[in-house]
Image (cartoon, rainbow, N blue to C red; front, side, top):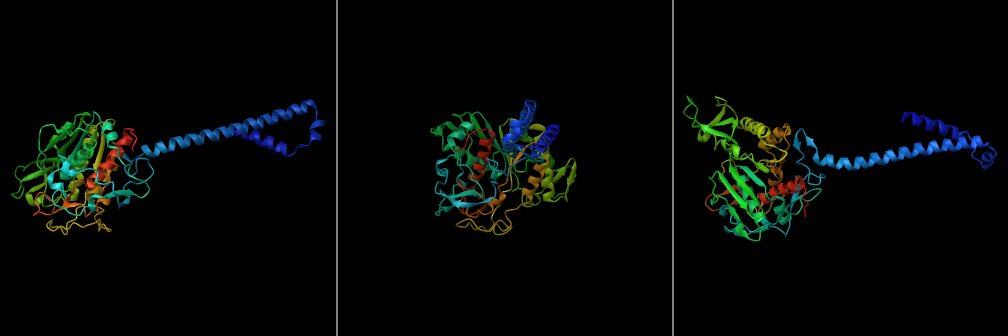
Length: 423
């Protein structure tokens, strides 16, 4: 290329000193005319080569760059802050009213717990059902449920976590059932009724040969008996370096969705006599945030050793903010509309820890960063419209409601991953 450019430069320099008049050409000898023709031929060849190279490079750039943006990783974390088309941050946006919502009727869905069916439990205002999440620079694609059912054909979707995970599990089943003609083809595989204490629930969509399952694992790591020679205040220990004993049942799945956080509070731990343990050592002075990080790192190590991410898409949903009046968890006011100020609920040390651990994993993990968007939905909690109205609830969410949006985002990612067109 350098030699060709040098030749081109010498040729152009020669041309500037030559006469191009008809008279000059007509008086030149035949050999001179042949020389001119050869020189101009070289010029056109070089220019053609340069133009062709530029076209090829530009085409390659336009073809490769979008694919790179969509498949790029940030230190091992799949780019969960990008929307399905790779062009915007799906987690930055606002809630807008949309009359096409809700996506289903909880009273008609046998897998929505009565305690989460706020409308069925007497809630009169219905605006909380009509809010849609709108990212700043794009839209979460409106789902074609029949298309999603086809995408999930012959697959196994597994949710692992606490009651917030169970709520999302119920939401997904109800959303998908809206596209099933014969509801009798959807059933719990063991005939179980949904309760908050059962460790495993599995719903089969027999017409499409797939299951949506829930495993109750509130800490993700193993809770064991009190170690020998432990102080009297210790009744059990959370083994931070051991994944939950039921984890072997999570492995053979196509989609894994994890969450944890709401049980990592003194009331569920220290006040009930549960302390932290690493190896054979009891860590009585370890703080909850430090223990949470150790547990999430244990989870990350388990994922990298046991999950084939070429087959299994792994998601970790960040912490879901609650809207209690104070830290006593006794006083709860559900608003009529979403609030305009997050008041610090858009951040969580648990969410930050999940993001930091996932960022340094070798396995591709998609973090569903729902903390900020959910922080504005103080109108969407169960409140007094539960199965037990005497006990207020500003932690769990009404169905239909906010968990449906989490699932819309989850399903949109899966549609992209499995190369299914969204509506």
